[in-house]
Length: 216
Image 1: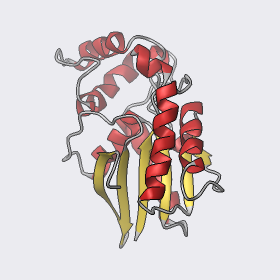
Image 2 (image 1 turned 135 degrees about the vertical axis):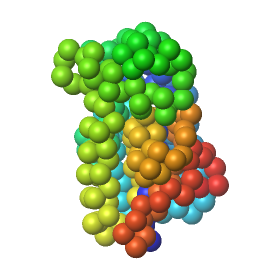
Image 3 (image 1 turned 90 degrees about the vertical axis):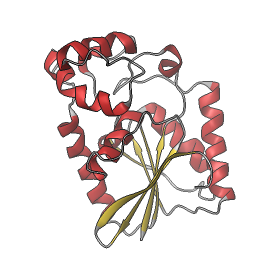
Image 4 (image 1 turned 45 degrees about the vertical axis):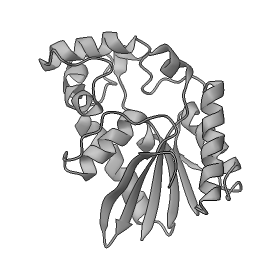
């Protein structure tokens, strides 16, 4: 059985400023760096030993993965960086205030209840509307993200690694949960430096738990 520990990156400047981040990037805050290091120590304390590590190729996930590993039982590991773990791309809305983007999405999706603090499930459903509004050709909908998720899961399934660290992003991890649960698990949000564990056994990926910071 493989165990894959999906971790959302540490808190960033744009998280703090409540701005759309997507495939753009800002550095971890002091708190974000502290929590990432603490998570590495937590993995070590709970005797979780990684034999593989993957990270989104964006700076905030690269920094988070390095801090986690440096404080884990496996500081020698070098994460494989991949675009397949990147956050959902929001195209022209990157860098905008969160509420502004989701207000535009609510109009396009015909959902007046959608706001920046709405559950991720509603945001996933609204991605089609954002993609229609985007003029850059870079915005993604759920189908686009599913393609990337399936690609990285295939890589992990065919690897020899048994305990894998995968550092990614909030809405991406919610999309992963939505995909693996056939939209039956309803996620409000994925917190910074929280852990969502997925196991792979007998050819099937299953969610073990969502959004933990202890008892990993």
